Length: 247
Image (tube, rainbow, N blue to C red; front, side):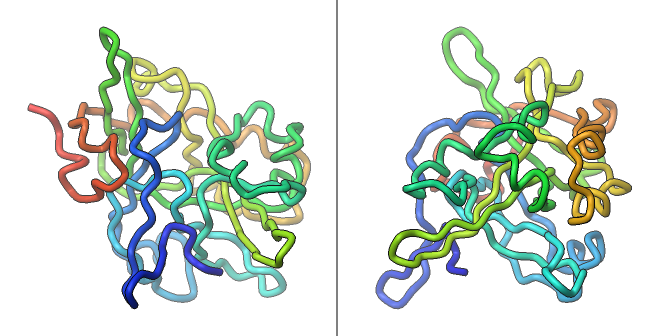
């Protein structure tokens, strides 16, 4: 599958840039963990070769771990961020479906089939939220206190256009904010506990009532949050300065 966030120009790869807007929660995250570490954490058969990313934005490609059809092995794939339902007439709908509420995803037409049959792990090591302050929005970077990688609970889908273009896409599940995130935003992405990875990926598990208990707020005491500069507001800025704490 072609990388949804990369285009070819003049024989060189360049990353497509979404509009310079502050995205809805959860609308930006980072993945700056070495491929060797990801392979060990997620039991991947091969070490992925991924660039460090400091400002991953909707419509760009995101790394996702899923169970490969037939083999039962885990595989790491690139999915377009913003789920495109299989029945959609236009892939543009994906830009509005970057998140799915954990409480209702199993029943919503856009997500219910993926919730039962096509779940994935989306590796990350931090994400951004925006706090409203005196008419403006202050970005915060949130991560685990020990800065280790973690995973968002994700859903994925395959869409085929009338002319045969195939796009695989994903959405991140969200839940109520924990005490660390709540001062910034009332929702947060679902961060799965390592003990729950296997159940979330298992295609034999399809009953929503079995899966919903996994979709809970992550323990607040294990997380840290700090303000960062407005640099992260523009997706073209994708460098370590995005996660630097403000003085």
